[in-house]
Length: 313
Image 1 (cartoon, one colour):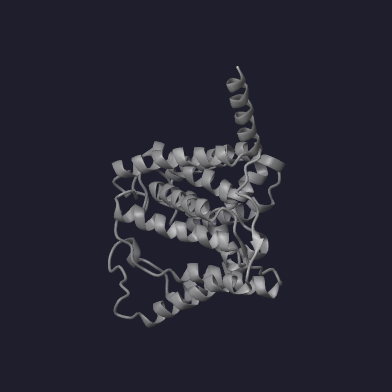
Image 2: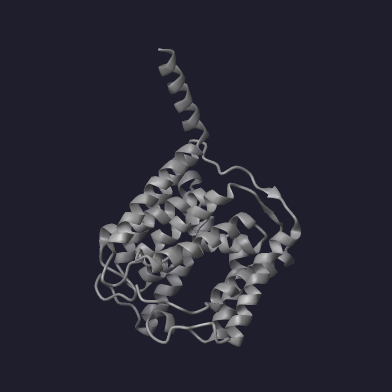
């Protein structure tokens, strides 16, 4: 994949918008301590899956709205991964409870985002931005930041989450969380049609590849990991802004996953999926299976009973 170097103001806006809205609504609460290292590695897994597909769940929806049929295979994988995760939820999967912690812990992540925003504005010599490729293509800074602030506030208010919405649809037939993303899909589709950006097909789509199997499998990883974590990447950012340090650790995992993917040739490109990426994905599937099984109370109890009977015989 091409080197992408740019501090995304919309992501900073998402965090700060959600943070300010959480404070306003008295929903900011510092908490953490729920299987932190497992969450960190799950964040890495989720990012590797996303970079094999070339997009997070939100970008998947935007790609569909632009006519990218490859993203439909990603959607099928995403839903399949969520379904697998739900199977383990029904078997008692849990990363255990979180605990109330010092309030200052919850403020660190929003403060860090303010610091990163200052770096973006001041652009010191040690900060490098891409001059070509995907990293060089972005909206004006203040427009991106304003958009992020608005979406962050809305996401905090509505609890928007692609994985959570699909999970709730499967478990409870509840479409509330999913309705926001359906609205995004509809409005993005209408916008693309109105401005002539809609281009249906598999080939020559922006920042995409046509390997259907790995588009599917990459998003299986994302969906499965998201269910285990309790939310998609967007939801993890919003929860981080609300003082949830477990989600902060997940976001750190996402960042490390991106670094690993780009530095060790795991990320896909328009040319397709790399061999390293395929190997990494298989390792991630094994990890997800182990984490899912070992944290599912019913399955562990059943396994212990079977082992006890075998030893008795």
